[in-house]
Image (cartoon, rainbow, N blue to C red; front, side, top):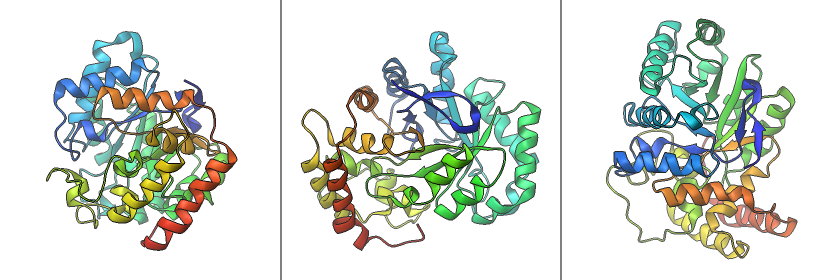
Length: 330
């Protein structure tokens, strides 16, 4: 798999990584042995970047990664693990983002991941004022100085939050929602990140599965799956579920995307390839609930770049079928 430098971390990572939210929860049940099998399949297929968070299954995702890497010392040295912190506090309270809490949160993540120093720790979509609070960045600098983390970045919900973080001299990476149905970061965020030398981690690349083309209007998700309980942002930002696209709109648009997919590719691979072709993207982090999904995602990099006509057709789907129906702060 081709590699790219992940911004100011200086680390080389495979362009297709693995998002590990589903290994902790909120996507229906993923058994412990299945979680380990997914990690093994991904890494053996060339994945070298794993993204998790301390709140995914209350640490379950981190613990699975820690257990897997401890069992595979042959790959542990070439795998970069990014975790996140902040959502263990009141997510609406900027005052919680202190050095003392950062120490507690990173110490817990280090224990879960069985490591002395986190490769990358990211603020986990904190309240917007946090991104312009000098003391927060001073505290993050201390976390690095302490050796708790080698680098820090941010995970954001909006373009303005991303641009505020990019202004900071020690932010290594920005994680943002980017996919065929959610294109606004292309306008300002990616160019600004390139200029600043900051890595871009593209999350929700398949719009919570819409861009696999496997769902229709009658598809039912489990009660504990955020695709059931967060469609209107009831539990957290609506952009995290189907990328903020109304479900019925997304299903119809995904059919159009499927019709554009070149022979030999899956619709999911088309969607991932579109992201990796965007200048400034360091790594895309699709999730996987089965080893086969992890392998298919990793195989995306083997396909040639999408041609101009396919890229234009995807843009027309967005302009005609998605953008007129989507509202919200992003």
